[in-house]
Image (cartoon, rainbow, N blue to C red; front, side, top):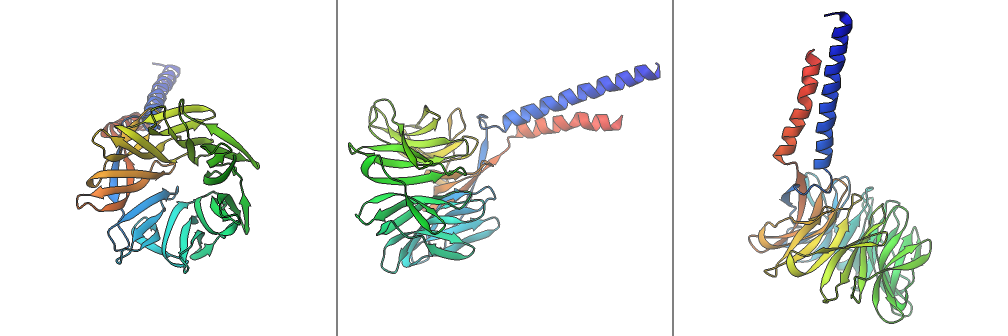
Length: 366
């Protein structure tokens, strides 16, 4: 065979190898996408602050987790978990209780803490310090989310004694307003400072809303429903909602530029969504036919039961862009503990990975 023919043969072999590698890579990409219905999860008990109860509310893209846990004397304190170390007590503003609801990728956390007078105040934990974020002229406030830029949203009491959605920007507190009613709450914010939550209308109904550039817009209801609440927003402006159905059941909903997907339940009446990531994966809990509630992840196609720590109940509250999920689950001893669910590749994916690299090894031998 001539040198030209040999070269052509080698090029053909290489082309076939590249095709096989590309096919294997495409398969693996599809297997790892949110729509893959076969993702498995391991569950890890995150422990407590020495007490019998804990709950994880949020996880950032570096794996740091914000939540709350009981101390040995059954007092609830805000806590943060990290890889390889037990939960750290974040303390309070002089009162007995605190809770961290959200954490951004910089490690800053937002939630609430009680003052020495027993009043709830929106709180920021950052760089080993704790800060009272203030109110809109009233006494109380709570922070629900913190964005990538450090802006914080929640609710704050006004001088009139009602609570309105608030945004904390450095040292300022901004009233985001309502839909003509008395109250509103902001639950989520993304990097573009688009905020979502709930506001009372002039007719006295609660409706999910979005605040953008100082303007408020309703996001609507389920067909036949009477109320809705927006609980979170991602970078693609997908929004998770709570809403009632025509049958007056409460269902988790995914809203995407006006398209509404009712996520359903596990056979029971209700479901509630609490977190979503930038891939459109949604987590929360749903009622089963036996009346128990179970943590779920919605992968873009269907809901999957995440399981428990041996008990009957579980709930998921946060998910990061790596697919790691946090929440709480009941143990065999009937305690509720903060947990971390981690995606685990199925054996078939690992086999395909090996197959994908086999042609490369053959090519290197030539």
